[in-house]
Length: 566
Image (cartoon, rainbow, N blue to C red; front, side, top):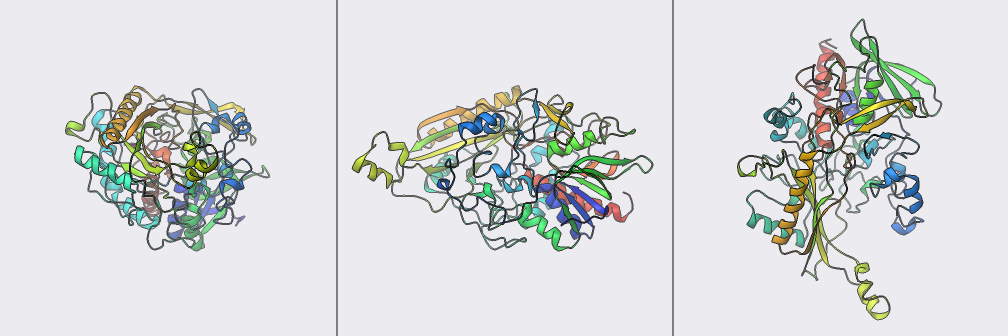
């Protein structure tokens, strides 16, 4: 719905995981809120156009064809985002170009809901080690908060969205408010038992993911997971959390939300007399007409690179290098999670066993490096976890031996061998010179500067990857898996789709952009609560942290508005 009024209590830029939460919390606190999305409208269920299609329903069997690879070499590096089933939910990088001083995989979703429709749904908390690490190790700057500051907000968002998993009582994997866990299969149980016998510091558990496994959750008819594993196409059951099925409907139900899609924000306006942001300027993506909207408070939730790009474009006499950029850190300290390193192997036996459905979550091994005592490493700081799972192959692996006739028919009717793989997800340290910046010589179709990336992984990550591969091999071999093969595929920053940093939180305005409540130090009515706020990356999927930070920031913003401090 489009409201032509131009004055609101609050403006939210972006409708992804952070933006949806900001909209919900602001609207439920009684603020008339304008929610801006640069992409098209996308309705829950109605616009999940491929959700019920099978591979054979697609002209190319849901494969990335050579034609597509030639046209989109950058996006094709992911191996999935431009497949037939999902390409409409990801940005076409030809139509929305970016630049690379060093290779970077920038995967975006320009539509209502953003990447909340396509995220991996793994929902882990950062730990006390993550919030304390920078200060203890002299890396970058100190976080302005600690785990206990965010713990009640983790509780709050977990309870609302629905997270399945198992509490283990581990400092390096904090307990949460979890729904009943999904079940592991027989081969995963073998691996779990082996780890418990051989190691005191390694535990296999089912992944914690934002899927409903019992009861319902608030939103548009959200119900239990159907084990279809077509999550990346949009879930018509609302079984996994997304802005479209959960937070945006909650915001709309209040009567306080005005949602405006096709709205490209290019500037946050700064009032030099009041030393506050007065609102935003947008370009209508379809008409290319410009509009101004005023508000008392602005939440910037356009994703890490998008949010920072808006801040960098928001120049004034006071802020010649971008809004709130007194520290010069805006655009710097770009991080991701490095992965695509691990091992896989075959397991004999259990020929009479299979599993029901297509479980949309794997197993998880929490961090076991650099958490104190004998776990501390000399070769690298921080650590990693593993995600993975066991499954049975299909008939294709036997075609060479049974290519025709009776033998082929028998093979087709029987599952293949059991195999298991574990893939490491490691922390990337913040470096000032890992950065993104704006190129005003290369502009997009709206006349706005394009983004250039200049970032790469460093020696710490490379050393960590050696251990990630080595330990994966040792654990699988120790559990009796055969033909275990380690791998370390080519990894490019951005491929984890966990871009972070670029507008970091900190204690000192001279070295950071945001304070402990995600406020810009020098512009108190502007809050940035997506991945750009991260001071370090941790080694776990970060979306749950963005939700918690957003809910916490809104509470502070509402309190400060009532006190007339902003």
